[in-house]
Length: 276
Ligand code: ADP
Image (cartoon, rainbow, N blue to C red; front, side, top):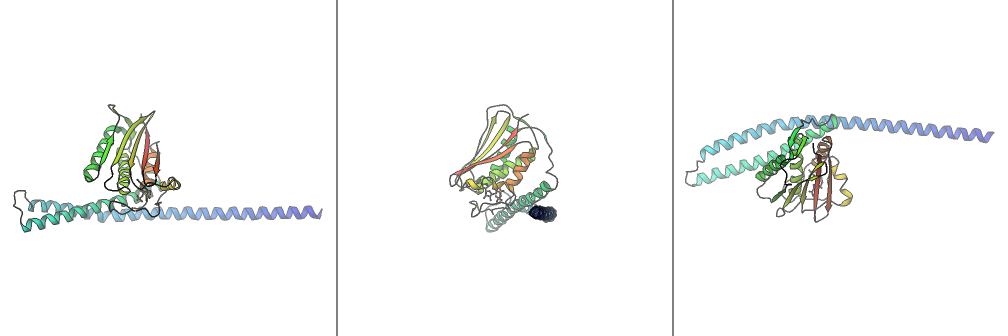
């Protein structure tokens, strides 16, 4: 009799201890959620604040470049003054490139806070993916003429998808700029558009550092970066947000993303979108 009372008491104590543990875990989870919420709010605010001066800096660079253009008429014979003006033009162009990079980082921060708060707002329309991919690759090639970029597309008149064209362009640019960043500058990058059953599949292949197998899942998390990886093109590593944003955008379109990679040989990042 005494034994069964003792067992009952021990069980009750165990249940109480478990309940306390659950309550503690719930409290910790709520605190974590609150913390995440505050971080997202802070990121949203920070990116807005950072973007405003960047817009002004960019505007001033554009004005300065235009004024300089008038001081540098084509027919002027090259003089010492001309060379100095040329150098000023080059310095302004460099500043312009850096502002573009920073603008992109700020845009990424803003997107991340949007993903956590609501979702990125999509303005989906029926779009010819063939044209969108061609235009995006053309724009990237214009901005980085020093890199070899190849495009392969299927022999069909059009591929219709319901997407936010700007966002899909952003996803492609992110993947291609990573391919440029993490592969030697003398190596080419290949963009390939294919039709696979009901999906359009876009892959971006590089011959760079690759991603170790154990990191291929984690690189899609926000702020995650593979330790010890260096960039080849002199640009800063970034914030570890591009892949996270890409995954979110593509999944919101009902598609999927992935990577196949062999360390020191290269990577193929891909995303697919449902065809209409
Ligand atoms: P970021 O490039 O700003 O660090 P991303 O989210 O775009 O952020 O990428 C996360 C990480 O995934 C990178 O830091 C890098 O370690 C790895 N990674 C992304 N793309 C490639 C690639 N093409 N080749 C090798 N590693 C890559």
